[in-house]
Length: 429
Image (cartoon, rainbow, N blue to C red; front, side):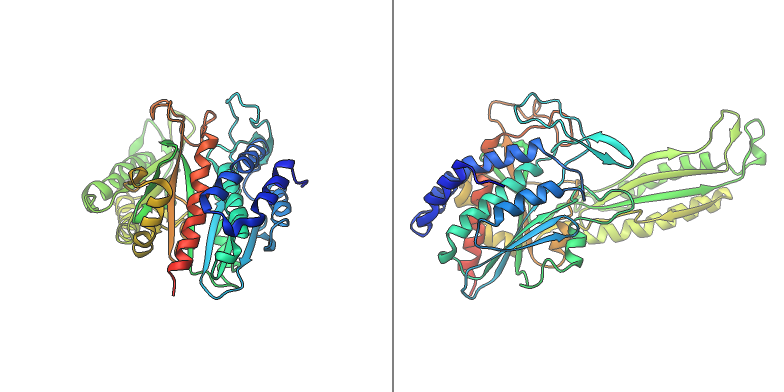
């Protein structure tokens, strides 16, 4: 990648970085962060196919004083900044992949790209803000590299593929990065990550101690009965009636067995397939759904209850049922280490302004950043991307064709990543 005139100007500006404040350096890099974001947004790639994205990131990182490793978990890029002084290793993570969504926004840098998903050609869009995440992490790498003489220890910049889930039949994302040793050599002490949010005002940041986002466990239930003519149901073992009872009973796990005042949980059946004619009771029915939990105890209880209810209802109807749980992937709880959260809260408040730091309730969405947090203490934040003149009701949701976040929201993200890294290093003995 050729360095732009802006990039060259930034290099000159950062020549005396040690004498400048973080805020000044973040101000200087903001135009380049916006340029990076526009490039990524215009050129999205699907999960495990982020080849050109990885090349673009790598070419820029080559202009910095960092050690680069590519093809981690297929397309991931990892860079290490070594201050040359003893201290902790702080990891910073951004996700890289887009979604099979056709963009409807009228932007000079809108996406018109396509990709292949499950054998089909599909439109591709950064409909969840990963374009901003990469740009913000590149901005933080620029600032921290220029402040190398003020650091203690190492910084590991992790550009992660396939956060949205690997294609069918493949593995990917944070889980694979962890298995390939991304948190080793050097060993990571803590990891920070953030997500732009289309429903939070620019300039604000939200945090949640402990369980911030849910564990996700997809499941499949195959009910086998006995086929018969629809006019003679007594000759059947009806898997459709069995499935209906099962769907209703699964809802009582949360409503009657989970102490929801302590921790929210969800059991949702998302699809039912069985039968092909009005007058035939089929032989089998398939249910597919998802479980979301915010505590280890609730997760373990639902696993046990699913087995109990599926078997019990099938037995009572004379049917057989097979439960696959988890189905094809599983994410742990995105768990913000409470001690780390408390330790970094003053830094977050300094970066955003105390009045702009909001304590938020957990959400039942999921994030594979959780795989990093299972290995080392981690903190995951939400950074505002909603323009101030747009109401929450009018702001398009994530994963939709109209999804939009304002460039102005990224400056706070760069500041947070940079200041949390520096402050954690300085507060470590």
